[in-house]
Amino acid sequence: MPLPGALDRHHWARAPAGLATVTDRSAPPSRAPGRLHRAQPPSSWRRRRPSSGRSVARRGAPRTACQVKRFATRPDLYNNQEVTSDNTDRRAELARAERRLAAHPGFEQHIACEALARSLMEVFQPNLNELMRLLDSAAGDFFLATELVQNVHNDAVRRRFVAETTQRLHNYLASTMSLVEHARRLMRGRTGAVATEFRRRKSELLDHAEVPFMMNLRVYTQHRALPLLAHSLSMFNVNSPDSKFESEVELSVAELSEWDGWSSASRGFLRAQGEVVVLRPIIREHGELVFALNLWLHGALSEENAQALEEANSLVVERNAILVGSSFDEAKALTEHRMTERQQPGPPRPDWGAGSS
Image 1 (cartoon, rainbow, N blue to C red):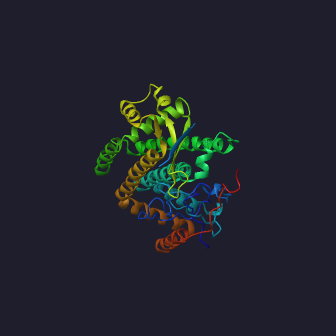
Image 2: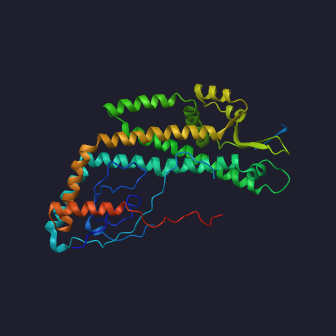
Image 3: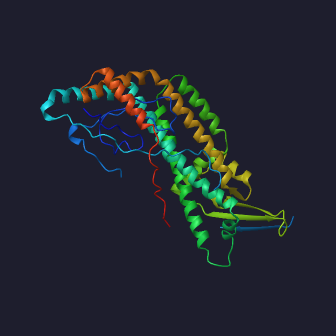
């Protein structure tokens, strides 16, 4: 019997049901390991398409923080084999095996860790990088920096930059809160060494002034108004070989302070900033702190689940043995082979943003 197709980590919801793969718990969440999977009932098995002089002016591919490599996906290499109506006993046996797998604590914990990894690596981290690319461009591209403060000709460049930066700031703040809630739900009611260490690390995180400020800025942005972005450009040693410039995107402290929702810590942070809040260093520091905490949490929970996951992986092999009609050892070899194939590089992922205006 040909080997059924296995699920892909990045498009698991769109892949056809087939051979489940043993999870590689040693891989970091930025890698593309095989994943445990409970197959859908046979009636739903169908292939689906994956879808020194100084002047200052103010006016309202650079390094990115926490970059992660994108991994390409591969199409299934084999056709699925249905359990036909002529083999109802085998179908029932397969359903029982899948229920045992779904109810196993190691499987449940694995699914929870994968959900945290998606929130961190596929939502929070891309939003952080997209925002940092814009802020770094304004700081390093002199043409863009001058366009952001000029008032002589059409201001289309400035308007587009402000629109995109406002959007990315909103998305980053929202994804931060999503990540916080996902981690909070995962740790609710949990005890033990990992829970104790997580509370300690979280307390240390909150001691950084940027963190409570960004938490409050999220509430301000989503429940009061989108903050108005300003821009400053300073030039030094003008008309000399040593000329240089400094350019930053800023928020007005006076505007922000009109809101009465800031915590005492955030109000102290705003007073310390002077007239403006310079976004770029704050976003970078905040992003790196949040990313590091949640990356540690994912690794610690995965390691804690290692033994239970080995047991769950045995149930995966048992399920696959029933599916392909083989012995346990043969199914184990097929499962591990399929997992190895899934970890090989595939064709380049298309750039969905290419050609967009």
